[in-house]
Image (cartoon, rainbow, N blue to C red; front, side):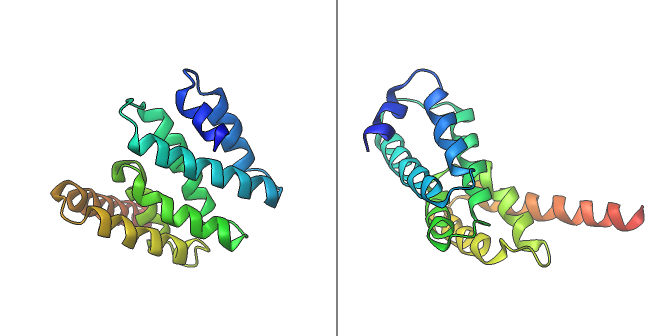
Length: 148
């Protein structure tokens, strides 16, 4: 909790970068600890009146998306439960791509996260539009690849 609080008040992103490095490392214990710190940091930031910049959320979102493929089930589940707390515009296109990719090992976790994102933002026309745009972009990419 203390590390998350420090990261939330830090003016530079050194602390966050260090936590994200540990979330991506090969050591399961470090990844679990980093996931816990990220969880606390997200909850602190969501409750805070301090405006947090887009790159902060984008970096966290990208790393949590990567965690959907983690070999440790607890980390994968935690990432899936944290993604709905992040702005859907930062994560929805990638979630759609993971779900639509055949044989992707992240498919189940991505589907769970996707459902949670839609449940928490389902009343938002903007989220539905993003979903349709993501599906359209995916279809266009598929057609372009088949035509090449």
